[in-house]
Amino acid sequence: MIGTGVLAAQHLRQMIVAGSISATPAILPGQVQPASLDLRLGQTAHRVRASFLAGKGCPVADRVAEFEMHRMDLSQGAVLEKGCVYVIPLMERLSLPAGLSAVANAKSSTGRLDLLTRLITDGGVEFDRIPEGYDGPLYAEVCPRSFSVLVRAGQRLNQIRFRAGQAVLSDADLAALHRVEPLVNGTPVISEGLGFSVDLRPAQGDLVGYRAKPHTGVIDLDRIGHYPAAEFWEEIRTRDGRIILDPGAFYILVSQEAVTIPPDYAAEMAPYLAMVGEFRVHYAGFFDPGFGHAAAGGAGSRGVLEVRCHEAPFVLEHGQVVGRLVYERMAERPDALYGEKIASNYQGQGLKLAKQFR
Image (cartoon, rainbow, N blue to C red; front, side, top):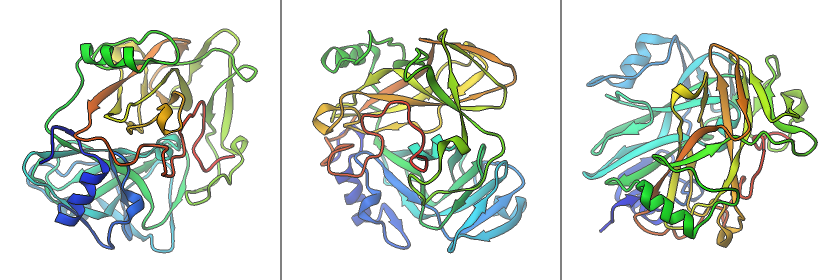
């Protein structure tokens, strides 16, 4: 019997055996993460005129037929162009039992490339949300925002997390947790989650972040540590603890707080209130059990902030709260933690670009 909370890796394997999660070809062991499952791109990408939700009672395939401009074979690789919208059937599908729902999010490297990736489902009325009892295929909507990318069938751009009931920590429980598992820096700001503030103190000289260059080459997602960062990113420097965000520009910044996710918890980054400024923080939002945790090889890890400015230039200052981390209880402790015996690219991270750059 599964308890209330986020399902752990061992539960996901049970769901695969039971057929609640299935795929063609079969799911690979490496797709199973401590509190989520990586999803794989299928063989075909459909270029569509605009982003969409299927809507109640409507299959995604019908919407694709309505809005499709052309299609591309991903078996040997194809370029998804900056500014275009693509719908890609995923290899995985779900047959959720009663009581289990799911939420999806972009993987860390996907978000750091400004590669907007969202899950859509048949009859779906929200992105990245799958209701209990859903039985059907899964699709990724992919929109490269800053860089054109070369993708292939089988690559993993997003991930899915399963929940039994709701187990979000209250502010009081979160405060108690951080008395046991303290922040590395400062006193936690707790209001409907743990507040994340931006770090704009001069460090490593005066480097505080990166801004995507507007005209660059294509990024092959399979090339790890391959691309010189300077060809794709401008360094952002400050000597007074503030920067001005340019409308439409994409930035990689880092949180002031270094946090830990204890083994019995998972977390998700949520955007902060829109009233705080003309920008959006949040692309890749899952934090697995063991992230930054000492027992899993961490010593507190910073949250990398993917920031896009909207209509007006905006002054961002050191220490400004820009997002919040919502904690949930695990239904059971995972049999492997983030950074422990698994390939985890961002354990113990600071200001860090996606793994394709050097």
